[in-house]
Image 1 (cartoon, rainbow, N blue to C red):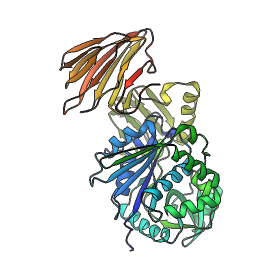
Image 2: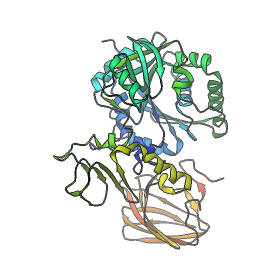
Image 3: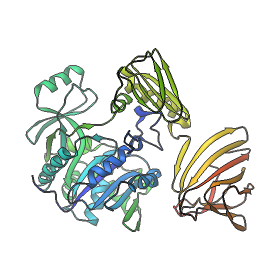
Image 4: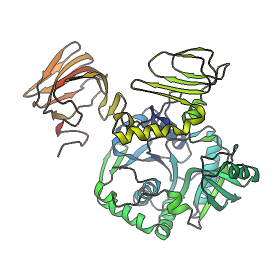
Amino acid sequence: MPQTPAHLIPIILCGGAGSRLWPVSRDTHPKPFITLADGQSLLQKAFVRGATLPGVSQVLTVTNRELSFKTQDAFAPVNLKGLATSFILEPFGRNTAPAIAAAALHIAQTVGEDAILLVLAADHLIADQAAFAAAVAQATALAATGKLVTFGIHPDAPETGYGYLQAQGNTVLRFVEKPSLEKAQAYLASGDFFWNAGIFCFSAGAVLREMEAHCPQLLAATRACMAQSRSAQGDGFAQLTLDAATFEAVPDDSIDYALMEKSAQVAVVPCNIGWSDIGSWAALGDLDAPDAQGNRIRGEALLHDTRDTTIHSSERLVGAVGLDHLIIIDTPDALLVANKDRAQDVKHIYAQLKASGHEAHKLHRTVHRPWGTYTVLEEGPGFKIKRIEVKPGAALSLQMHHHRSEHWVVVSGVAMVVNGAREIMIHTNESTFIPAGQQHRLTNPGKTPCVMIEVQSGGYLGEDDIVRFDDQYGRVSG
């Protein structure tokens, strides 16, 4: 088996809402962050998948800038080799072609055009790492000759939810859209059609040359955006934040439509790697072992006369009586009940929530911030109660609210608090009151998380009532 090159760089694309996996997947906690039964998220598995390949010394991730700190937190416990991590942060989604263009431009400039990019989706699952590594070795050998390589999955069912490609050996004959059931059955029987996995491998120089030939406007707009973008570096860490104004001009297009279906340099590596895009609760539920009646349970549930039902409950006991072929997903603020045969249609619930402006399409009760998390425990007219957890060494911004006052009670750890002109240390079971209009900040100087209860009161309690004066994460107002 050929060896992978020294400059093989996994590019993880971490975006998309994962609307078919609502209510666990939301805009600020999308599908890649869903945790599987073994405790790892899909994003963490994607990182490990790339990081453990021979010759890999760095991983580049393209994601939304609102997810950057959450992504870094996800990588920390699985980056066992201490690989350099870099990030390209998008202000909003523009599909896969701009993301790959930005990654290729960045790698060409920082590493060189001969560097091989292995593009991985953050929300796929690959069960056979050894087979995947062998397929990557084949792909990098083809990529070194200037080919744009895609991975074709041997189909084991007439799946109508995937795009297909027809191939002979490593030669792609044509790409085809998601087929009807009859066409999918014919593709399966033919033996020369493969699922288009959305995994790609090419040198930075080759993909940029082909983009120049087939989608020059998209490439030029991405290059212009990157010239206006901000970069930052730290110890084993680099970050490029794309400029929002110029990124608006970049066309929204997938890499398949913009390039792969047009280029004459495309090749394929057919493979069996245990691939799944985990596109619905039916697919995700199938990862859990069934009981004797075919039920798949995550969390605490009591069942009576119930069959072929998937139940996920993170916090509450679920009782199920006389059910068959259902999906029940319970989260602290939303409950999904669906027929398994309609699992793909969960996206319509998400779409309705988004269209109506309901925050359940975007936020969980627990919201991640660069400094830690907050959880809304209870709220009503004129008050809101939160549990706030601040990571060791982290700090909230120096800020002020126009419309609300806050009472902070430390229940675990220690907090250094700026409250107006005073700086005070607050220990467990101590508190401070912050009136509306007063500047304040909390820093955790300890080595363990600081947990506090925040009681807000006032005429308006929206998260947008905040003026930031100083912030170590670059979120200063104005």
